Amino acid sequence: MSKQLISMSVNGKKLEQAVEPRTLLVHFLREQLNLTGTHIGCDTSHCGACTVDVDGKSLKACTILAVQCHGSEVMTVEGLAQGGALHAIQDAFYKEHGLQCGFCTPGMMIRAYRLLQENPNPSEDEIRIGMSGNLCRCTGYQNIIKAVQHAAKTLSASGLKVAA
Amino acid sequence: MIPPSFGYSAPSSLPEALKLLAQHGDEAKILAGGHSLLPMMKFRFAEPGHLIDLNRVDELKGIREEGGLIVIGAMTSESDLIASKLLTQKLPLLAETALQIADPQVRNRGTIGGDIAHGDPGNDHPAIMLVLDATFVLSGPKGERSVPASKFFHGTYMTDLQASEILKEIRIQPFAAKTGYAYCKLKRKTGDWASAAAAVVLTMSGDKVSTLRIALTNLAATAIRAEAAEADLQGRPLSDANIDAAAKAAMAICDPAADLRGDVEYKTAMAGEMVKRAIRLAATRCR
Image (cartoon, rainbow over all chains, first blue to last red; front, side, top):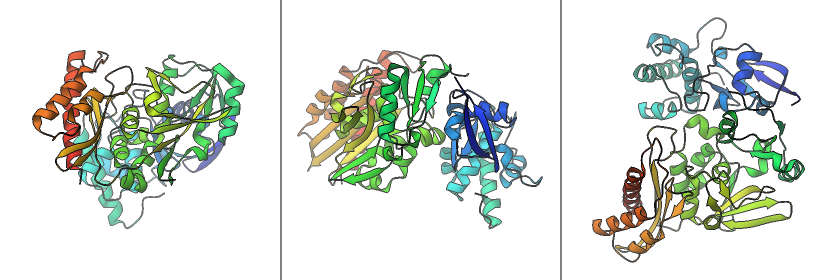
């Protein structure tokens, strides 16, 4: 099938590319844009390793076509750190040991980023429900929850809203 | 996994979508949230030649009140059902159900119309539509027609929706005051389909059942109404013995497929348990 021209903003950078309709967003990000922070885990929308932010919503990039994101604003884990400084969520995962093998971590962090904008002061239960679409096969959930709580505290103490 | 090649259109209106559907005929498949269709295409279980993506058709999104009915656009996402204040007030069963479907990311894409039109007996909205006595508005080349939920689900992946038609909206009578409701779903993990699930809508007259509707998910080739179980409780108090009898009547119509979620006997037993829990939970809300 012929390629279609799509334009979108990825981590604040506008771009235009030709894609086959069958190209999944996750393959577009990883293989056409070389943004390999977004991982492919189960490839069937269960594990959340491929979670990205599209137009202010968390989505699983393995189950959406790149052409469907024409005109969208996409944010991946590469968009978290600014000016060489870790984002509060990355710092919290580091400080609270919120990762073991690290495979699920990009999806966890980009999901936590959106969760904390939807709900800046979540209870532990709300974090568990909000993060329920992301699996950690090391089963390191306790520290992941702690990391999200840590980030929530840092972000609210700083008085800054999480960058939109 | 990458799906086989296909063409892609993203119309911005329903007439445009219907035109594309007529143009591409049997080759075409409607893309809603994509969380059933795209995995099926990746596994090569489905190989449509052309996808017509409804995500840019704004007229198919949203929840409104019209002529005393709640009208839900087919492309309304599960997340939007959960967030809707109108539904919280008038049909809280829908948000309770949507919260038990998949996970937050999937609920941002998955739509109520896709869940219904796909015809998968594991999907949750069909049973809800049966207990709510919903009406589906289908748009086709010759105009619109309305089909009650009770006549829509013909078999696994088979519905009354014709290849030339698109599910436009769902129309539902809001709950009367003091209507109890519940959707009890047993699943192995977040994101799984039901091992067994039961939907209940209930009103009481004093201590006796006034109206009752029960429907089951993933326990037959389609979602099914448990009419004998409803009749068992009609006009009677919700005693343990009466609830047990209704659960047995519901189990008698179960014909689940054995799979990794359990064998026929286990799923049937769990169906009975979900019916009991849903009736009891609904009863606590009849006030």
